[in-house]
Amino acid sequence: MSRTLEPGKLLIASHNAGKVREIGELVRPHGMEVVSAAELDLPEPEETGTTFAENALIKAHAGAEGCGIVALADDSGLCVEALGGAPGVYTADWAEADTFEGGPGRDWYMAMGKVEGKLSELGPDTDRSAYFACTLALAWPDGHSEIFEGRAPGSLTWPPRGILGFGYDPVFVPEGRNQTFAEIDPAEKHAISHRADAFAKMMKAVF
Image 1 (cartoon, rainbow, N blue to C red):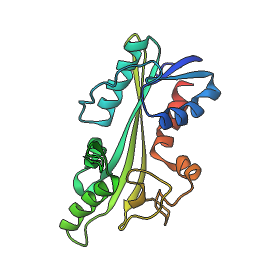
Image 2 (tube, one colour):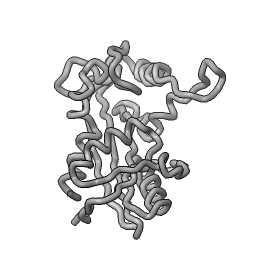
Image 3 (spheres, rainbow, N blue to C red):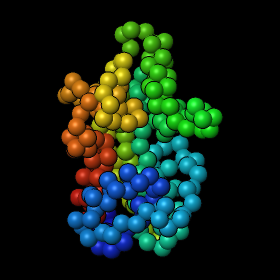
Image 4 (cartoon, rainbow, N blue to C red):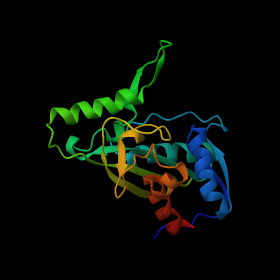
């Protein structure tokens, strides 16, 4: 049985302001006061896990130990069936590139092209089904933790379409739709996303 999350402060173990804001809006109605890892100047732990759950737990436990309150972290990515689940936990790594300014950055068009190139090598009849996965990890200062996993099934298209999303959204068509995640209104996308699925499970279990 899951442990109940009592109203009070909740650390979002992330330095991503957009993610902190999105999560905050979801948990505030349950009496949670959100604070981010960036606000507390907590270091970002090295994500050495080989699964979404391992990486989410690394971040959540580091946050809970660093500030002494319950911490919530997530890890997510794109999994392509024909590529054995890749890029998976290395979703962001596939986008790592040198920027035009000469420093490190992420080139998502390059990452999408990398996925498409590998699928093309497998032939025109290759299965193009894929899914976005999200794993949420809640960690308490005493070491207790909870895991919640969500998925958004769909398939990949090429060339990329839409400007509303980010990451691999322009090539991902969610199941039952004709538009890519980058063509769907953000509010509508959030309602059917992998993160929404994981959050629904978490809300039901701990609140």
